[in-house]
Amino acid sequence: MVPAERAARTTISLTVKGCDGCDVQPVQNRRGQITYWGAKKTVHDGEVSFRVPSRRTHDMAFLVYAPFDEIAQDGIPMVVVTQFKAKKAGQSVPDAYASKRRKASGCWAGTTKHEVANTLVVKQRRQHGRIVAAGWLKRTWRSGPYWWTVRAGTYHASDPSVCP
Image (cartoon, rainbow, N blue to C red):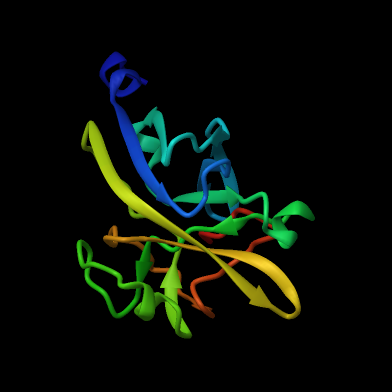
């Protein structure tokens, strides 16, 4: 690795709505394996940020451990939806849109930018008799090509290597 590659880093800043006290963790998935575990950080005053190697942002997913999320309490975190299939990168995602059954991805295509920012919306939902977290980015980031069916914006993964 050349020194310039080591030096290239990206600051990811998320304004988090609805989940003060949640833990958020970025992970990179490559061929079904976790190749990078970012530090798990707690949302304070609606903000959380990460400084990660830019090369690690490709196929990055964001895991959320919400204190109210009964599935996350069992060790199965919520995966943030970074793009809904029918939405282009950069488009806004209204809450009503995200609350329906949709095809979505939590596998961010990544960036070479030094800084990116977005709003992460987290909602409490009831699913199969349990309180769970649902989460999506307010403005989509280019993601995929891995698409799952999500209901009401909620997707949990027992194996966080969600980008095959």
